[in-house]
Length: 505
Image: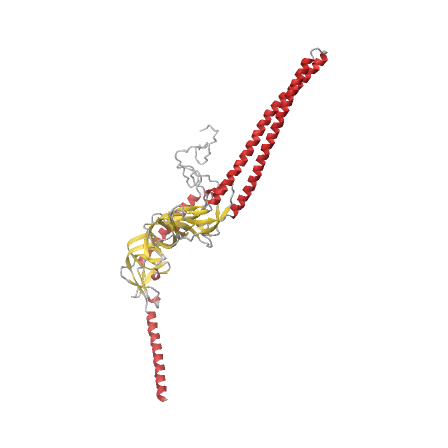
């Protein structure tokens, strides 16, 4: 029993000793300062963005163009069936079916209207036929009346003058009635022709409308215009057109057949970084689905106007990157990791950003020998920064603040003047760029600048060829520009714009 208790005690003591030893060892290891080495080589400043593979060119699979007909007046048509995205098709293969519901209703309305127009056509034809037939009978009867009046006049030659005159009046009346009937008949014929022409046009128009919608309905089964891989069309908001999506008449594309011979990566750069991105910059491209693959490309298009993507607050700018090569593994809509190389520096020294510390705007690094080394810094990327002065290649520096940093002494304080000059130069360049931007924003349509807030009270625009002295006059006046003249004193401090109707000098 005692032996067993002794063994347990020894095991417990051993475990406690191991724990204490491990703690001491881990503490020593943790306290050991981490180091970094000053490296000399090629330094790149990159903008890292995520993009999406797309084909530069593609063939659209279109719904029937007749949907845009002003006669049919379709608002939208839904996609009823669509083959899976990524399916390879040959020319003429089935791709999609459009919903016929709205077209069927329109077709029924057209048939009803056609039946009504056909009935109207028949009615107009019968009405004109009966009307003209009645007018012809009336003309014949009036001709008989005129002949009878002529016979009556001939037989009244031996009658009293009053009877002869009455017979002549009756003949004139019947002749005038006959001539009016003939003239009215000719007008009625013209009107009947016009009515029949209108009815015929309306009937032909409706028949053509019926044939057109029948042609459209036969085209509601969409087939591929060429060979390729089917890619779904994207809406303005980025959503893909799938089963149930509506096709508007101004955009009849159902899907696309991308040309895989030239691929691009479509990406969006944050407004903070867009000033660094320019056309022609090289890009290193990776495909997330194949992390072991790497491709080269170049920036070919940078948007001038920003936009706000759905469900985000940040403003971004569209950037198009064209790949230099194509691989069979590439597929549209694959996610890409793009490193846009905005600047490259050769044979420069650089260190990790974590090693740089500042005190009173003075950058420095910690060395193991107890020195705070002042450094002159240059451009930086996401992880590293260029050292222009203060360090040499291969030197070891600390990655974190050491214990008792106040014991480290400064070296390289003579570089403070260089650092200050760099800061002043940077501020000067920023002010020049700001002034240039404000000048562009305040530029008039005719090319002169306008910024009323920057002029003294009462001062007008400065004409070309003048400069003011401390009093506001122009003692150094040069040639008088067109449209100005001197005042009575001969000074140029009161310029008056010439009236177009003024012939004075």
